[in-house]
Length: 296
Image 1 (cartoon, helix red, strand yellow):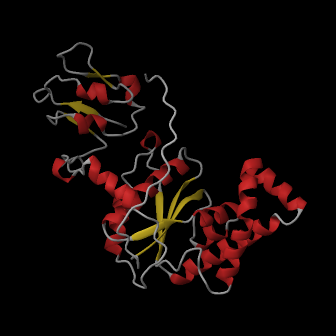
Image 2 (cartoon, one colour; image 1 turned 90 degrees about the vertical axis):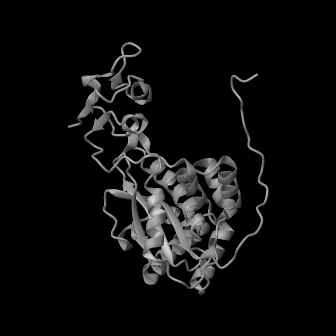
Image 3 (cartoon, one colour; image 1 turned 30 degrees about the vertical axis):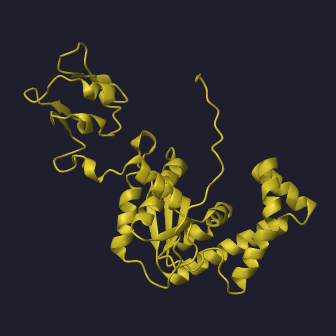
């Protein structure tokens, strides 16, 4: 049960809480009055914390955010637009790693950023599996290689092409058909001892969620982006392994390797380590394709 309390003696009647709440649970019926709570909507509160985060006076108490869980923003620590843009421009997928384990404290810093990613209805569905066991990482790569080989070989026959088209749709199958030789090549390299799938990453980070919940995939991949940027700031490198995701979608072997609950799915994968290479420049990308609606 959610409980929201106003401390009348502190409230300055600004109405910011009523403006910020996405469900209009606090209501300011007239300017300059203390907001009241819409009791019918109160049970629908999804605990986003907007009300307690917006109040400059600390005049609101929310049962989901007890003392110590609401922290003032430190403006000096918030990066400027130029600083943020430099980070996203200079970040690169790192696929060459030092043979050096990542300290648990460093991984925890990445997860701390990841858990603050936005999520649909504030469900915070994303869960994390951190794998540092080289044997398990190798087995995940092996399962992935077998899956890539199977997909590539499917395009050698008309029956396989038809099956792929039914599974991935016409355009998806056409894209995979173009990639088929590369997929088989990566699998062959892996099986011959050259890991171009996970690049012998010291750590594999899986982003998971209960498949019955809403927005599981979207929430997980928002968390992935937070994790990628956080890793960059503390000297770690990583790359998104879509091939592992593809393999996981075609069988439950990876899920069993990591003891994933049957109700859960893997929605994102990051291979991570200390990078061997340092990039001193960023390169231009294609201009944004934008459709402006309602602008002069």
